[in-house]
Image (cartoon, rainbow, N blue to C red; front, top):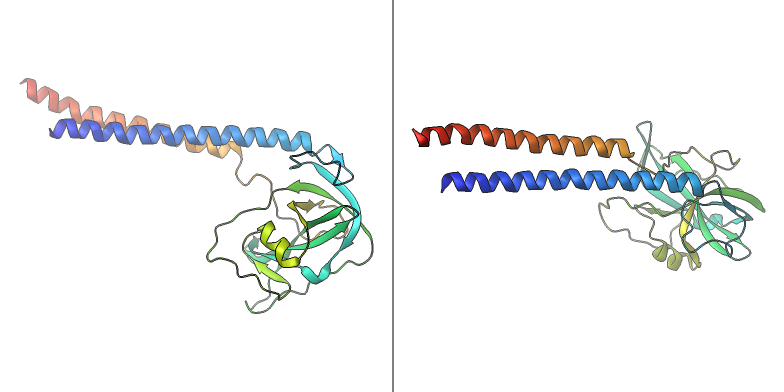
Length: 229
């Protein structure tokens, strides 16, 4: 019974390791597909919200409009070279709608209760960038949105922000072109982990599965020989 239990346990562990390896392989393939989509879509630029396809992610967008500085959003927990800070987002209005523009990283003051001095850009401006889905990070606690501006949030929940701002925001954000004169320090990357790392993790899981099977064979072989004797 002990031997059967060991075999069943080994098979369960190996199955889990192989599944983890296959999952990492699928994640790598997803990242490769995302990289291809990013490369292809970012080369195509739209010049109005009405012309955007049903899935506008990763397409370029260039529009003229104005920022609404009174309703700034600070996306918390953004590090740059080891220094804490925020991503600054302003609502931007064009003829046919509103959307959030991520201007980039801004350093946090020394004390948590302080907020950074935010840059403002008045008048009609030309904005260009890449359309992206709002990033979702692990939340330490749920955001409590109130009427104090700027809002400091851990995640960009567009529906909640739209309600709080009383603005019909688009369900995506525009990551501003790094070359824009109003862009701050750019730390945003569309792919946090490239496919190569996923393939490396998959290899590790598969090698662990091989190691477990080898150890199990080594353990069972002496036991079998002893039983025959």
